[in-house]
Image: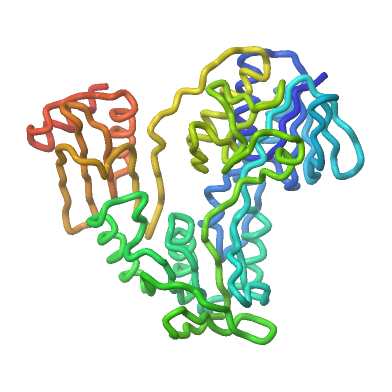
Length: 395
C-alpha cells in the first residue's frame, strides 16, 4: 500500500522529501483539491493586477513527482478518512488504501460575517484562482480597500497601488504589523505606505459593505464611509480541520500532534498549517517545511523528533524587506541602528546570547541574523554595532 498525502502545499512537498529520505521505493500518492501541483503561495499577492501562469511558480516541476515515484491526484477533494480500515474516500467515489496517511490540508482564508460580504467585488486571497478572480475584476483607476493590515494585506496593497489602483488599508490595530515588528519599525512602514500613496485607516472596524449588486462603499463602525469598487479581506486563515474531525482525530485549534507529528489515530500524521503542536498553529512557511519533512520521514518508518526553532517572519512589504525572529519584544539588552534611507535593525539579547532581531531594508543582514538566532550565538552586547555584526557573522 501507498503512503497517502492529503494537501497541495509546501508541507506536502516537504513530506515527499522526508519520505524519500527514509524510503526510496514505497509508493506515494498526493491528493490535492486544487488543479495545480503545489506552488509558491507566498507569491500570490505580488501577482495581483497582472496576468500570470501558475506553471511558472510551481514548487517543483511535474517531472520531479515522477522521479520521486509520486502519483498526483489533483483537482479532487478527499471526503472521508476511515482510520479503522486505513482508507480515504475521494469525492469521485474512489477509495485509496494507505499504509500511512499524512494530513497536510493547510488552511483557508477567513471571510468575516460583515453584512454585504456576498456582493460582487468582495474577495479573499488564498489560492491561484482567487488571484485570477481579483485580476479579472480590478482595473487601474479603481478604488480598492484591503481589510487587514497584516503581511498579506500590505503586500497586496503595495502591488495593487503599483498597478494604478487607489488603495486604502483598514487595520483594527493602532499600528502596522504589531505581531511582527516593534513601534519604530511600524513607523518606517507607515511612512513607506504614505510615500506610495496608500491610505492607512488605523484603529478602525468594518461595519458593513454597501451596494446594490456590487461593492460601492465600506461603512465603518465610527460612521465613516469609504467609497470602493472592490474589497479584499486579508483577515487571517482557518485550518482545514473538517475531514480530521469527522474521522475522530483529536483537534483543538488544529489537529493535535506529538513531537513526532503523530495524531491521536494510529498511522496518521499531520503537518503544516493544519497541525497544532505544543498549543501552537503557526501558519508559517518555514514551520510547514520543517514539519512536513519530519512527518514524511516518520510516515516512512523513522522516529524523527520535530525540533521547534524560532519561526522567522520574512516579508516583502511596501517595496522593502521586513524580517523579524525570536524574542524581539522581551526585556533584556538591545542594540538599535537606523537611518533615514529605510534601514532599521534591532538586536535583542539575553545575557550574551542573541535571542531576537528585526531588520528592515537589508536581506543579507536578515539571513545572517536568522542563522545567529537559530544557532544561539553569543557576543558582547555592549560592543559597537559593527563589532557585534562581525562576531555574529562568524557562525
